Amino acid sequence: MANLDLDIGGRRFAVSCEPGEEDHLFQLGRMVDTRVRDARAVGQTEPRMLLIGALLLADELSAMRDGDTGPTINRDEDKAMAKRIDSITQRIENIARHLEGVDAHP
Image 1 (cartoon, rainbow, N blue to C red):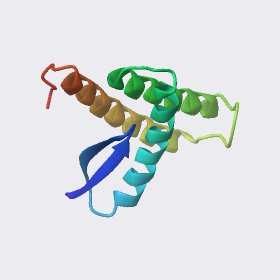
Image 2: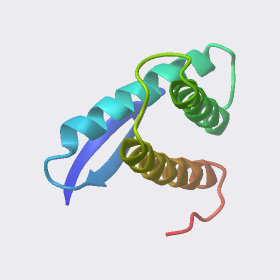
Image 3: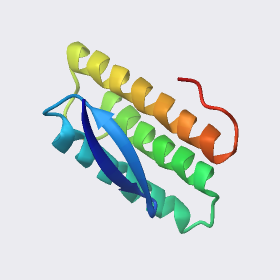
Image 4: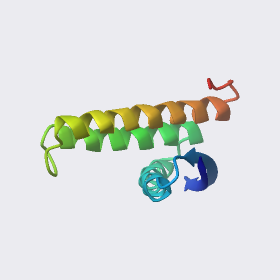
């Protein structure tokens, strides 16, 4: 496993990934950070900022799936993207539980 730190919403998060995926994960972190910083401007708590950031990204993905913006995603790419989003969603939920003082599931 490779380890890296992601700066999201002014906080640093240590994450692990498969070797060679560091750049991709870093880019995903930058995307989330942009959305979280947008949410921070509204004056939200940290867990809510993470949630809103994830929802903003999900909204963009939904628009792409519906053909509202960008190229159409084929079924294989769509399944892979859904799997990644599920994984990211689980991580965000675990972070939010941790920040709220509730034990996160492994």
